[in-house]
Length: 206
Image (cartoon, rainbow, N blue to C red; front, side, top):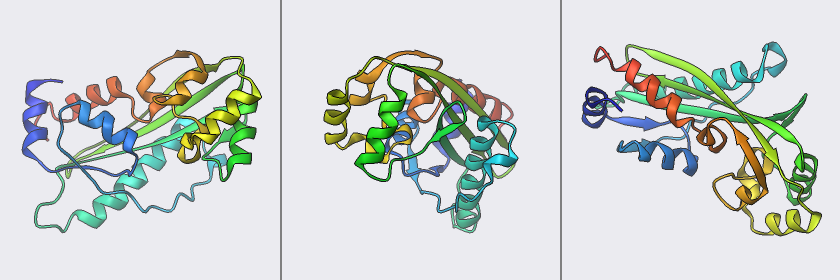
């Protein structure tokens, strides 16, 4: 992170438009004092209208940030930067969202076992003057995991609030054989790409 960028970030009000503790943890790694204001945007975009999953999650992140921006812009001290993200897990034409119950989590994890899938994370960085939108993707290969391993993992409770029914940063990492791409993209916020775009965003103090 460039010194100029850090000086700008530490002097302003930085808002994370997500209630995800994983994203909060990643942003805190940058040394930013971030405030959480979870977006209440109704995720009703038509995925079929998009050429690829990356553009879809990029727009979801954009609209989440816009909702928070509109809500907070009238504050006595409005945000100097709002950060938002959205993550999607896909294998072929199948999208893996958050499981609704343990049975669905078991079905998801069983279908991902010993196969490769793709994780897409879209990000939006918005200041009062500028906005940058982008997405990253990473390939994740699950190992040859047994039904007993899946059941034990589900009993931990970790899969239930995560796309694809696993958290790579927790016990779910035991299911992953290899990752081709940014680990933090799989976690929910691509750290390298986000840092790079923040430097671009504040290169002219905008």
